[in-house]
Structures are given as structure tokens and as C-alpha cells.
Length: 344
Ligand code: SAM
Ligand code: DTB
Ligand code: SF4
Image (tube, rainbow, N blue to C red; front, side):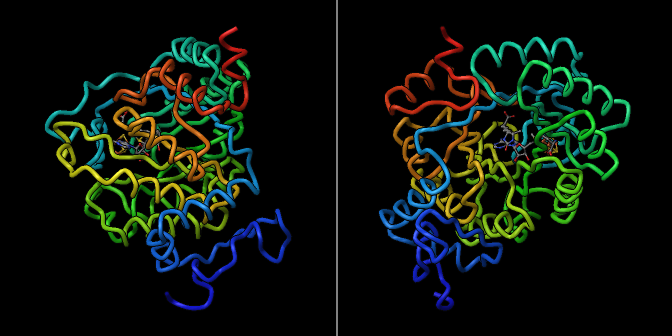
């Protein structure tokens, strides 16, 4: 334990001096602090995560986002986990940017199925000006349908972030992916600092930040703590924090990565919840092969958002029906346009 302010000796934020329901937002988390959290006995970690979760959120509430790949494959970057990189042995077929109308038809379907946010992803290093105009038209159209909008297009400069803001964009997804130390093992074509720069351009433009990472890429526990520390020490915590379990795609360098202990994944969710008390923590990719029981533990650890709909970008996600049954079994409900209303 590093010092007296370690997570173990520190009072839980919901019981802190700021009052019973006061939430203490810290930006000074160290890797050692997070490592101490990850090492807590499981019941203690879960208790802390739940206490903090309940101080800011209804624990039965889940926000749902639906993803669409608006420009698939052919990406020049070399992210070792990604099936869309043109540098891997078997990458997915490259498509052109979708037409605005096609995207809007998909967004309408997502809205009618109950999603509150529509996230559009493009396999780009960064958007070209002409393509950015098309994406801005998509953002405007999706907003007109009453959905929140999110896009993930790679690196942005501040002028590009400003254009997306002017189009009405609500969230920009750009992940740190892993710790600064492990990052170089996974991606060589852009730096950690490039990612931090994009995040600050997005933040400065007044767009909400969606930023998280991936677990299960061969990183060690210190790297996992390092990812959470990097997220929780951003000048403002991301509003959304997607924690992805690596989807192992054959033909990518991480296609045969070793499976991780599901309880270690739950620990990462809990650490994200404890360190970023007001953020929506998303149980993101990797649910397709996750048991209902592991997903339930993630919700108990403070995850309160999921990707909903049978596809992520290029890989499968649980069928909507499976998610509805699970949430129903747990007595949980969704925010925004309720599933029940959407099904009625
Ligand atoms: N090209 C853009 C970029 O990388 O910023 C946007 C799309 S990219 C697919 C968005 C994020 O998806 C990545 O940063 C990564 O965190 C996540 N991702 C990609 N492939 C994944 C996989 N196989 N398993 C889990 N997450 C993955
Ligand atoms: C995020 O953190 N996870 C999503 C979203 N942001 C863009 C992407 C997951 C992709 C999983 C692999 C695929 O379907 O291609
Ligand atoms: Fe390209 Fe994004 Fe995939 Fe990296 S994660 S290869 S940047 S699509």
C-alpha cells in the first residue's frame, strides 16, 4: 500500500466527508492505487463499487447504444486486435462509406428497438474533409430521429471536432485501449499522445467524451491498472467508459490470445466504477461469449451501459432477445426510450 490515501484505507466516497450521498471525484489516482483496488478481496471490491454506483445511479438502470460500421475495413493502422486493419493476414473486406439514407434507415431500426444512442464507427486513421461532411449529415439526420449521436472516426484535429460539434454530435468515442507502457505492443502507427491530443480536441469542442479500453490482449495487471489510471486522471473523466473484452478474431495478431479469468474482467469494471463515479461504465465488446452470470456480476460491479443489437462493428453481439430476457430476469430496465415501450 503506498500511503494513507490508498484505496484500502480511504473511506468510500459515498460515506466521505462530503456527506452520505456526496461523491468525491478524484483525478489523482496512481497506478498503485488502482492496483490495490484490483487486488482487494472480491466481496470488498464489489461492496465499494456498489456503494459508489448507488450514490449516483439507479442500479437497475442500463443505457443502451447501438453500433453501426459506416465505413468498414481497409484501415491503414496496425492495431493488433482489429479485424479492420488492412495490414493483417485476414482482414474484413473493405467497403466504401455508407450513404446517409442507408445509415438513417439503420438508426430508425435501432430507435424502434429501444436504443437511446446510435454510434457510428469508421475504419479510418482520421477522417478526410469530404467524408467528414457526409458524417456531419449523418449526425444531423440521426439527431432528428430523437437519438443521441456518437461517432468514432480515428484521430481528429480541433477544426474537425468543431465541425462535428456544429453538426450536433453528442459523443465522440476514442479509446486509450491499454496502459501507456503496453500500448507499443499493440499499435505502432499512432502514439498514446496522439490519442490524448484527439481527446482534448473533442473535449475542448464541447463534445462528450467516450473513452475506454480493451482487456485480454496479453497485458499484465499493472497494465490494467495503468489503463484505468490513465482514464481516471484525464482532466475531466470521460462521460462514457467502454470496457471491452477482446473479441479474438482469427487472422489478427491477437486471434489466439489467452482467455482471461472472467472475474478479472469484473474487477476492471469495478475499478472503473470506483475511480470514475459519475461516468457511464459500459460493458462493451465481448458479451457474445460471456455467460449471463458474468454479465450480471459486471452490472453488480457498476456497469450501466451496453451495446445492444446483434452486431458490434464487424463481429457478433448478443441477440436483442437474449438481452431482453437477461434484463428481465434481473429486474433491470433501460434508460431513454424504454424497451417495453418500443416493443408495445
Ligand atoms: N478507427 C477508429 C479508431 O480506432 O479510433 C474507430 C473505430 S475502432 C474499431 C474503435 C475501437 O474499437 C478501438 O479503439 C478498440 O478499442 C475497439 N475494438 C476494435 N477491435 C476490437 C476487438 N477485436 N475487441 C475489442 N475491442 C475492439
Ligand atoms: C468501443 O469501445 N467498442 C466498440 C466501439 N467502441 C466502437 C467497438 C467494438 C469492436 C469489436 C470488434 C468488431 O466488431 O469489429
Ligand atoms: Fe483502424 Fe480503428 Fe481498427 Fe485501429 S481500431 S485498425 S484505427 S479501425
